[in-house]
Image (cartoon, rainbow, N blue to C red):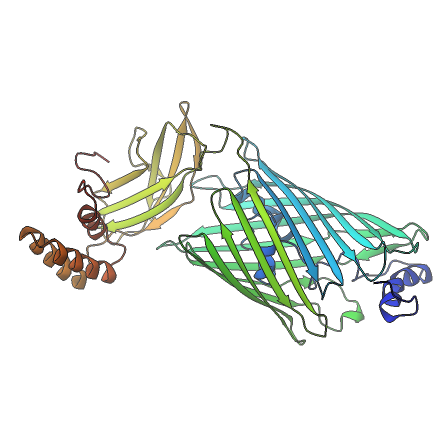
Length: 473
């Protein structure tokens, strides 16, 4: 819908150009290419209200923390569309991410924002991203990434254009904890020495840098809580001491990680906040995401939807990086099971391990093993062990999984009561009663190897446990 040139909406968009014409020195612009407000890319990230700096594990990582694209080991193509502020703005975002064999991760993305109230007006950002791991043993836990961005805007209706260049620097640290928990922290500086030049006046306007620390805690493989605190590094009085913002989000996945729901909240410290919700469905090759955000100050509602595709680049070309799926402990035992991405290949696997008191990792087994599981016997109860798995391809070590921390221990007394009861029922041929007792033992000690192993033997027709009879692993 066209609006009159005298309308407040039209005037507010022209105000930037008037300011540029009326000043002789650079002045901060908060409207152009704003990274600290309600705008953002990545449907999953926006469902978390933008609390994504310390997560950054999907293709929108280039926007929130370029170091995060080092977590993407497979080629991804992503596209998203947003109807923002009651359809006053439209957004498009596309990205392609690819990991080289040298462990250099590359990304290309476009972020386009269209202002429907002023015909022809839009903002465009074209980004190239590079990320590398700084720590390779026992896993790539510290990443660094950088963005190089080209900025272009057309203010619409012949009022001029502006263009410039920008750079962002990001760091991401990931620390695995016991019981499948994980802590991560990120730090990003966006718009390093960034300005745009107006073509009609030659005047440059500075875009203020934003420093964003963020932390995230993964309670289990499916539940994450994240907090970001973007801080706009500017003394401009127009900010009225509102240069600090808090973003929080929580996410949980159901159905073995296929169906996800999330919610978030973002606010300046002294202004009303914005709530967001989102949902996702994913399978090994594609993901669909949706996010809703309700805005304060009569800005209206925003909706985003996106789709991501995992590229099938051919047999053997996908990185064979293992991912640990299960970990159980028992009396002087540690059990690990892992898998590698579909389409990849490994000739075998090497397991490295150390205790808290040991500085260096050593091989738990000297020769590569062929199975995707391993039972480590002889571990000391009550001692924390760090372990990781490396794929073995064409006679060389290829890629390592994230470090795993676990502590072997005997079965709890309450669980052992039901475990022994199950053994007695099995001896008497009472299979149903034995299964019931094992279920009760599992509830009391869900991470115990002996319980899980016996339970699997009861449930399978071959009566094989986690490690088949005769397996030396």
